[in-house]
Length: 529
Image: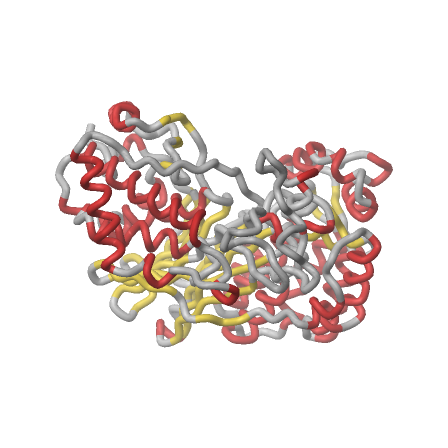
């Protein structure tokens, strides 16, 4: 069996593909996709459907994200691709935050993991600001209208899925330490069981207030902001009313990389897309698509991934607070330099030496949407890990993400925390155009596994020219710069043996879940895997 991207179809995973449609789709969380489908059927565009579905998903999947989630990022192609833009709604550290608050101990660990759990772990929430900005810029419906399904779900409740019940049960001890979380998730001290009804009437009132104002002003600069700031002050957090008032989501110019007649667009720093594009740039410099030997091709791809991860974890941070070589990382000269280094190592039968620790991260939702007008978009929103910081603003039902965990706690690192800084994170919404026509929107959930899963999809779809469904189904590898390489079980034994022989520490592992839409043969396709 051939290896390195030439897998037999029988070894691939089956992707969840929707029936082809001319009307359009929203895909990313089956429980709430029907909300987007109804909006499309009633004449709303892809972004109307996308935002309404994301808001609803933030209610039914509170372990993945929420209105208090730390960030959302997206890619949008409107008017047949004449307007392409990226959304940046990353969290911002409080003005009172200093780089030594998370200073690691002698073992490199932050004491009490306070950068992950608790009120210090959360900065200014960006999710609701990002969703509102996207709707204002690209949607056609009033904010109050797209909020309606989320308000109803929060107020009337929904059956608890098994995954949510298990997540609450697993974190029972942590929730008991926070009054707001205990009251919301452990009524009478007991975690909900699968199938029971979960309601969040306090959050419904927050959303109803925003709907009445048809604005997010109350959340960032009004009465709700005052109550959020009081929650932080009461519990030892640092976010103030001034921090909330200073926050704004923004539209930014995407990063781009061309391969043949396709162009890949993804948000710039501090998203994970720069690392995906760097991997592809190295593969292009290696002339990877022309290499016949499957085993050599496999090793070269893993080495490109490792080099890009090395650069990501060592060099990247908020470019507004210091020099970051992001332009060099995507340059042809640097890609050629990396390719030369990889080829020299492989020629001697060795692999490169950089090594990094792997950190599991999750707690994200990702949606993609398309409509009959040819508009497409991908949107990812997150708490960070499950339930974010494990804290909830009491009286608002507002669980907060832990964006501060995405900083590197070492004070001298480019991604060290600091006042009003934005952290590096893993979200990778992607838009693909063919010529000038938008043809694919796709994103993923799964923490640090997202960039590598996206690379696999792009490798198959753009470089290998495989159809959307096959590209989504291709089994994936994961590495973060070290010698450890994880593979999904569908990878053939010959490939795994080749990696082991090359010197990697190979073991089975999981991947991110990608959800996307694509135009093929005049019809919209949608799928998850």
